[in-house]
Length: 165
Image (tube, rainbow, N blue to C red; front, side, top):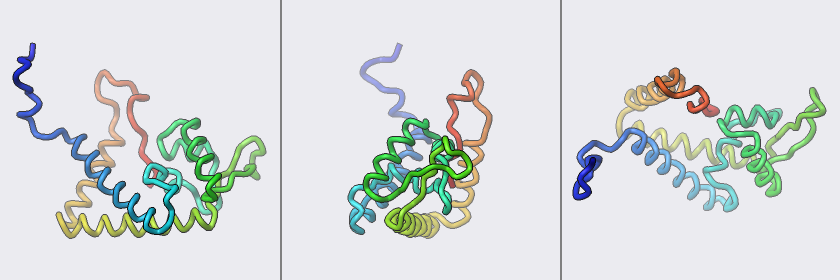
């Protein structure tokens, strides 16, 4: 039993997951600020997976969900939100009338362009701060972690899929 007057976790280094989350939150905050400053005050970094996963000629909803590592239902909610705000259009898939194809509007492409600028600026800031080689090493290591087989005792469905790149 743990002594309630001490917390053994306070003596440990911060967990890697907490550090990764904090770094992600920093980029998300910069993206949210840039979007708001550019007049896209109804879009947040939380919508980024949709913008990152759409192909230039449109993408099926199921493919967007898979690329973004979210359920079809969650992707559907994001798509409805963004479509009602003129960032996306949704129509039938020419190859399969039962499927829906999502395309970016001109407004959606403007968000993609702004997001690309913010991400490039953030990556440059990281490279300046810790070195381009370190950034590339961390990026490679994270891709390897995401692609690794499940740890013993964990099922494959507990593992995240690689987000859209």
